[in-house]
Length: 255
Image 1 (tube, one colour):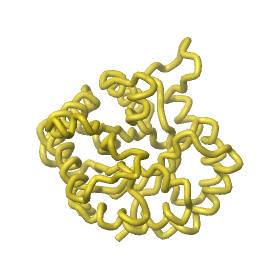
Image 2 (cartoon, one colour):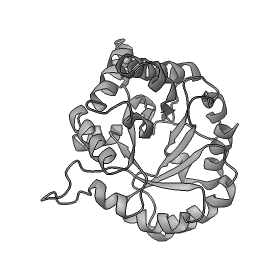
Image 3 (cartoon, rainbow, N blue to C red):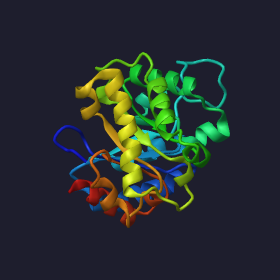
Image 4 (cartoon, rainbow, N blue to C red):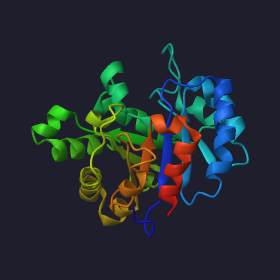
């Protein structure tokens, strides 16, 4: 991390886990453990848990995010949630383009861009996920793909808007598999994303943008990962469902 130019952010992505009552209990357990964090702390929870999460996090340093957002303001989109709905519910951040959304629900680079624009227009802070599959890595396309996904996601996003954007490099082959990129692989991937920002916006934006690593970061490997120059925190899956583990990751990013 380079805290002189950008924020370290640890964001939990709960995926489809926890009921509202369980959300309240977990956040109450987490609050004292992360109260002294020297980084931003975010919990991205299922839609049904947002109200409970916002209430439980009141008065603490924990910010609440959602796991997805639709790109239309309203309309006949059964089962979807708009950016304005999230904003009014007390959400500050939103995950966009997670590989599970791309793999299981037809998310594309184009819809990632549309959701990003909708989030920014509503005053939300998008956490945009990019990442390659194992096959793409083995074929040598990691740099090309990460740069393409990053630039596509940020189409029509201004340099000023980038103050509210986080990018998360999540190698698809390391999500939920227990396999983690090496520290150097994570730094390299994040570096490719930063290089794309440099090409699109210039040095100031590239150096100021928070780029997280999100492939199975946990309590054991967090400290060495966030020690890398281009790793500005993490988008945490399973470990964010355990208060003690999550707090260890937050402490690692607070150093």
